Image (tube, rainbow, N blue to C red; front, side, top):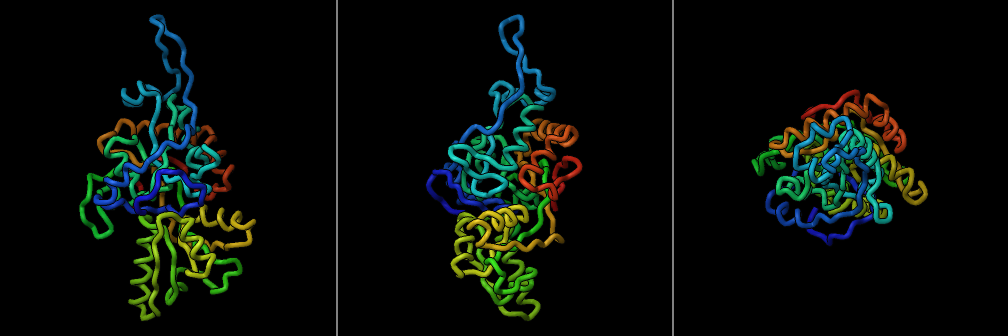
Length: 324
């Protein structure tokens, strides 16, 4: 995901799984974040004797003092990835903002989403631009440890509060003319993927597997957004786009009135999406985990998933760094 203009897009995006950006582009990219709408409402407040207000949300006191005073949690996202997060007019909407909205009622502060390119999001957080990242980001050991795709240390890493489970979705043209049923069927063909995502790495891994198995060479092209990868598939320049399963299914249902694509799910490789938090900010991490557990318990988490037809990705309890 390279530098681009700061305007927010409405395109669906392939992001599930995204690799931490390399430091060289991330520092520049962190400047690309742009506020795209206040997504959530905080908890209630009651006046105190001295005229100040006391927040009555159940988990408000668990938050760091700075966030209590600010009344907001600034969240980095790449709002081009329907149905997880995308633009609707001036507002960022989707499953992730709806989960955050439910959590805000427990925490008593607003979640304010800011949109930027996916591979710059973690750096924007560690430099203080945002407090957290919630962008269908796959929790991986490499991201936890701050490693790039070659295993080189590029940062301190992050902690994740895991909130959703997703598998690989293979997006192909309507009618599936190449009869793609699994990743192995992609050998000898060309893929389109979003740059900086775990699916870019998956394309590399599958290319290596095709070669190892003595099959025809798999090639792929990486694009700044998933919308561009989708366009490439639709135009016939690539046979498939790799995506998160709920995203691929949503695109297949909606693009061109449901006439442009089909989605093939590969349910054997499910991974966890997590809210990323700076490793030093354990108080915020733990407060987010408590809030997520609370909305799982009270049913508002399930309601958010059901709204976006994503119930298959529900997890029974919040986890910290549950990815592999």
